[in-house]
Image 1 (cartoon, helix red, strand yellow):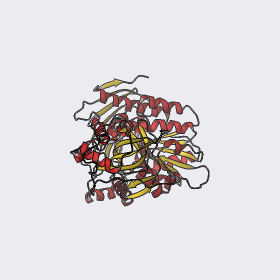
Image 2 (cartoon, rainbow, N blue to C red; image 1 turned 90 degrees about the horizontal axis):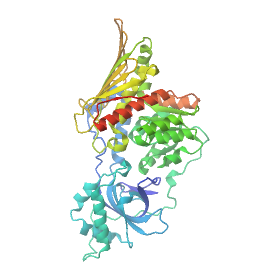
Image 3 (tube, rainbow, N blue to C red; image 1 turned 90 degrees about the vertical axis):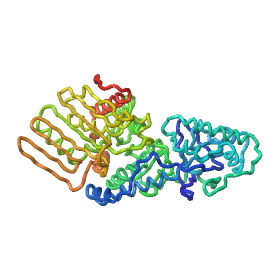
Image 4 (cartoon, rainbow, N blue to C red; image 1 turned 180 degrees about the vertical axis):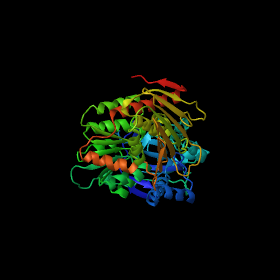
Amino acid sequence: MKYLFRDRWCDVPCYALYRPCALVNVRFAVPLARVAPHDQRAMARSWRKVWRFVLAEGPVATWNKIRSKREQELLTGDFHVVLAVGALVEASETAPVLCLGTRHPRCAERMLFHRELIAPLDRWPSAEELMAAVRRAVPDAQQAWLRVAGYNFYSDEPPPVEAIRLLRAVGEALAAPGDNMQATLRSPEIEALAPPSSADRDAASASRGHASGGGVAVIAAGDYARTQIIPALRRAGARLDAIADLEPLFAAHAKERFGFARALTDWRAAIAPPETDFIVVASYHDTHAQIAAEAARLGKKVLVEKPPAVTREDLCLLLEALRDPCAFIEVGFNRRFAPFTRQARRLLDEVTGPLTILCRVKEVEIPDAHWYRWPKEGTRITGNLCHWIDLAVHFVGDRARPVEIVLSPPVVEWPDEERTLSIAFDDGSTAVIAATSRGDATLGVQERLEIRRDRMTVEIDDYRTLNVTWDGRRVVHRRARRDKGHRTMYIETFRRAQRGERALYTPHDLRWTTTLVVRATELALSGERSARLDD
């Protein structure tokens, strides 16, 4: 379909249907206000920061991150509050409807709107009539539209009451004849736009001819997928079959840049073809378990990004999928694949006894409107702290299981911020994870791990230094570049799947890591401080 992006009509895949929304064939749209990308992390320009990243991760990785951040700013910088007139795709008759979009392109051939922001019309108005009705119904237009800007229906939250009120006001003004129906809002900022006709609405989804088998589908085309997942898969020699993202422009951009055969918005269509046999799931967290389980049911090899599950029901879904002895579901906890994690695990396995694990984590700040904050996504404990919860389970191993968790009291507005989590295992092992957004943020997420067992102490400093002390002997290993295991994880997992080997992540670890994450999230949201873990 045609999609207007920065004054250029682009061919993109059509929006996939979404539960609370309806798809509309657009006759014309009126952009009312530009939406500032307040749901994105603010990235201040800093040559000091760039230089520090060059030293820590190398010039190539740094440039790729800079490029992707700029792409993200570009892709998210052309959303608007819009009013559109069109007809519901699902309707048998072409009755007109008026729609309000709060984070939409200025115009597209088809657009997706929340059903509560769609109102029926008794006739087809002209663009001039609509703009005149807007002027009469919303005197303080700019401020009124900005108050509803940014609402994202993918959050599954109801639309703002103010947005519903504004839509009704415009609809009523449009239905009632006014004294000045010829008045318009023509200006450099506001104009009516009509999509061009298109012979093939889904031309961007057409696939090229390719050999059967061995194809890869990536579910999500955001910043992380562009900087980490897709480059690693290309390095592994994967054939890029499909890229799927709920945002049509994101999918089309990734297809063009990386050479995917298909760009889609529906993950089901991406994983269905028999020639696609390896799936990477990196979409919204609440969708991970559903997509991974369905892909496994279809016989696909799956790498599902962290967290693999957000709820207890998600965990049951994945554990059920793993009952199939042929199922391949790897979980994207990349730190397990880091060279220093693997070296530390080998050293600690040379001694016996319970472990004491201390993790000090400097997290990055995220804005209040970030999608991690959506209730269905399970808080930052689910999205971030899960990394170090999983490391604790990984180091303790399958010889023990967690029995109790304790969460420090909240000290800031958000219940998942600035918390310390303690985990007790039934073999006497303990893990303490302290996460904070405070402190120097030049190098993004930074971490220090200290693991003690018997007379051995292993320290990992931001995955650049490994310090081992054992019976008075001290050995220090240093890396020129910080390596948290991202590239190794994707390359190694893809190749293991191609060779028909089993995934490394075990049902034991899936069960206990997810149980800890879900229970810690429940404690944070309920205000409780501790919980025992039942069998």
